[in-house]
Image (cartoon, rainbow, N blue to C red; front, side, top):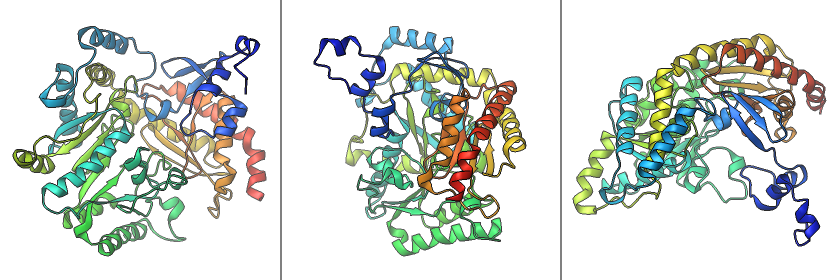
Length: 475
């Protein structure tokens, strides 16, 4: 590290040095970062990135599952400019409001009503990230229980492999151990049920129906053990994203929904990733016929052009909050940037683009094309166990032995070797933290030609990594 007390060192202070000496990076090994330095992005357009060194890459990560309409859209810049000049900030506290946020809330509800059959969803609370939206939902479960006079009904069932954010409550809901180690998480108010991923966790010879039976029995046992009077909610991503693009077995959510209804347990649908077209449908709740009491949105709401999230509240919960208002007064929860007018304007422009350019339909069509091409090109590779997905949400899971489904040791980071090599071949994909899975989640504007290029580059990266994978598989 440079000694910045000397004039000579300051003169040689590069952007990489400035990063190492100034920034605290999320989800980054500090020692390796200090040794190897940052990967600095400089520009992007459509589905293409350019780094600080001038290297161009095809982005099949969509940033972090979030750049749905692609990079560099001038319509978004125009909407942001107008919004800043019209009303660069106002808040929602104490009945204050602004036109763009009002219109966005109405539009989000209409999209959910029309495309997810969710006419029971009635109000939208805005935040700035999926994590804070899930914190809001975590608190609303408790608030709802307290207002109903059942304060003990506050525990939440989450699932192993689920990802719900990294603020304190959201990280507790997250069911991935790496996010808990050294943080004294999770709390005792969150219980993690089994991960619904048959390929990895099914028993030898176990049918999909039998596996689903076992998953439902696990949730039933948790409810019986903890007592239904203590369970306030169950939270689930329709398709697990960060966990590994994990698609539940047939009938799973129908049976979960019935079980929750039986025990007066709320359903929280975390649609931070699956919302706004990622799965080839507008919402994962519509894809699986879910009837959530609370629904979490972020990422695709603005395609990451501005930090906006939403907690959508059902009529069932809203009626209790409204009836209790004369006695309890204001709902003592909110953020400075809840319902930011610039963010709302950007979200409206983003949704205009998604609708006018048919991006949800493109996600379904081109996603299916990408999935089939990946299966055809690398599906029989000796260290590729499974290739799966819906829409433009695709996972490639690696195995040390595909015949016996023996996984690589987590410490070997086999999938990270492939993802890192992909960057060397001009392709940005993401190695995930729960299982040995590389995810494809490109912008929804990607073309079939782009997909052909992505598959070629990924196959080349996999070929280049195969000797290292072979060595790891032997150890």
